[in-house]
Image 1 (cartoon, rainbow, N blue to C red):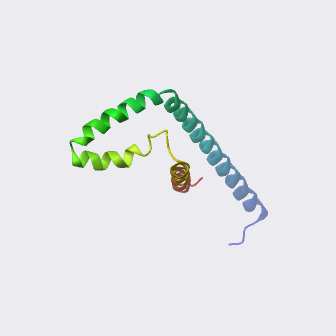
Image 2 (cartoon, rainbow, N blue to C red):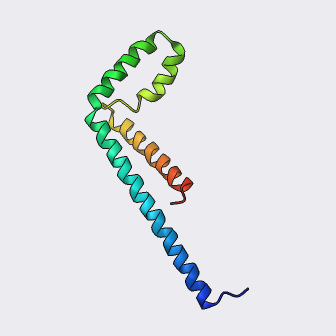
Image 3 (tube, helix red, strand yellow):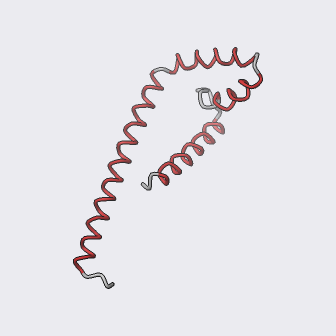
Length: 104
């Protein structure tokens, strides 16, 4: 079937609507991420206190120690520049995967 100009116009309109919806969803996700980052920044002292508590609990439990080591890297505010760069690369990769999954 050959597309007529009317069909092309309808396809174009649907594509623009889908793109607009995807941009809106992306804006909402960015707003939610910004809000989450603000809450985390405001509560960093409490998070560090909890991290220290988990450090103490993990000392006596090898299985918990393994799991905690993987999570602990994301809580440490005193990262080296190399650690920070690696964390940012991982974050960007995960964000990219999320955008791909959401087809944004």
